[in-house]
Amino acid sequence: MEHALLVHEEEISVNGRNCRIDIYRQGAGKFFAMTRFSENDAFISDGFSVAEALAKQRVAIPLAMSCRPALRTRNAPGLPSLPDCSSTPGFI
Image (cartoon, rainbow, N blue to C red; front, side):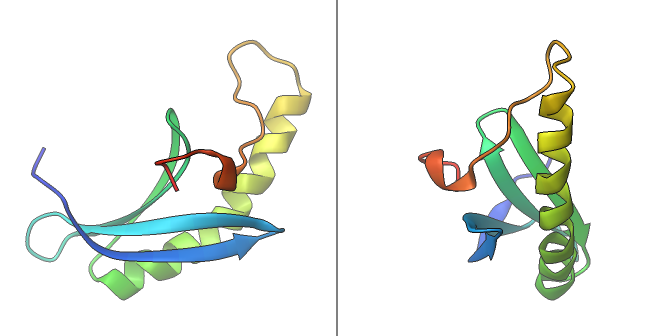
């Protein structure tokens, strides 16, 4: 895997939770956005520009967060608990 360089950071609020979106450049014309919910839980979107990766992430993060409570309520082994983006030091 190529080295990724952080090129942009932005914080958004989703249903009262603050989430950071980090945008990385990886190679020529390759970008990806990452939001970490915990050390073992991240959501990633790719794009051909910072703007494209950021736009995809802004749309996807609310959906990604809304899916997590549904998973938690099923009480299935190994499923993650509801993330709180603002309570994971070093990951938002």
